[in-house]
Length: 515
Image (cartoon, rainbow, N blue to C red; front, side, top):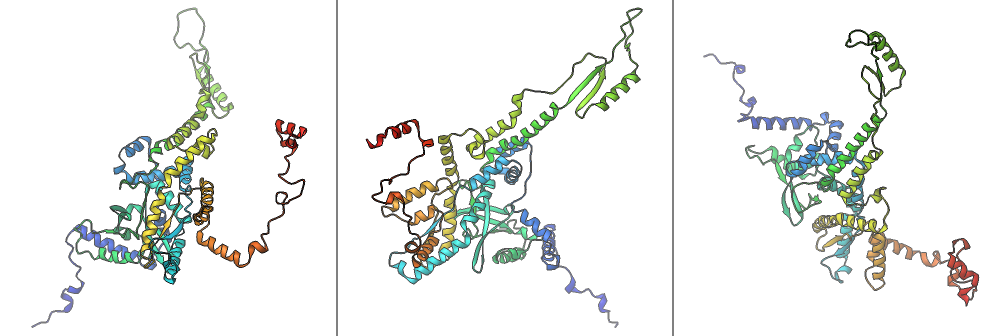
């Protein structure tokens, strides 16, 4: 019996697994391609750069009709509205400054208080260690530098998605790609979102750039038994470690807070284009030359009886056109015409000003803050109060995030961060109120917070100053007339004659104060 050659026998170990449908084939192909891209030899900084830019840079422009349609149905145009908001932020300076203005109103000054410790507990080593850990975490998150940037994104897009990253002794918030995040639930910690694991199948995406648990999520996704479950690629994330900062928490839909200004913002750019066209038209002139007709009345009337040969008329027209500056056109016609220009009423020159005025009226913020309009002190202060109220509610969301995160980190004792409603406009007012309250025994910590100094830093500073007797040795008050006795020249320094009012000059001349 002849033995068959082994090479004629199919090798079952090399037979590819059976693929049941096209969807499975596409998924397996994408996974294989992704694995190849994860190879260090294929790493491309260009891909990485594009991925980072796509996190918060995807501007797109639309015409007015399209903008109106999107605003009427924001539920179906979430991504497009976000892109439009970024476009307006880039090209309309008024919109750009308004976004930056709102995001920089809060100062993010804060203090930490214990929530479950009494006076005896606070003397213990365990409590001091716990509080020190809470202080360290807050310092690592750096609210005064991190949160204003988050707030700017929230004002632009309504919601920003983040994930807490822990690198040994450091803690940071990693921005997640919004187009791969979907709000799926509302919890006591705010909204919860799920992340689309297909993001890691893109060219250049490195899963090691994300928290370690994402490798486990991706493994579950890659090893899914069947792709027939259409939702298996969405991974819900822990809302404590994956916060959603959302300007309007009354609804899950993403509607940019300044969406009502989109049309007014787009009109500013449109009116600038119209003004440019108008200015160009005003520089144009058309000089019309008339070809004379023969005036001979003898004999029969002849149509088109021109007195100048057409070749001569054409040559002279060309000569004239060559001699005039740009923006002037020469035409020749047998009709009686006048010089045509495109001058319009001078009131139309302020068309851009009208659009800006409409923009600030719709925004509800005083144009004086942006170098426009007439100054009105009382109206300006009222406008600022309204602007403060528009954004300070975001303090509560940042408090909720930090405090929920601290609960899992400080052990037995609980601590919470408080952001008083201090802004760049009212800090002086708050400082005076806190100083007055401190005189009656209330907290001195708030005085430090209103001054923009971290309370723990203030305590360390005072401890250091006391250790070197700074006040007694070096900060000796200077002698001045108002603290000396027996000096006939004591009291407030005299006002110069040039600064005196008419009544003041009369009082000094007649020495009325000493009578």
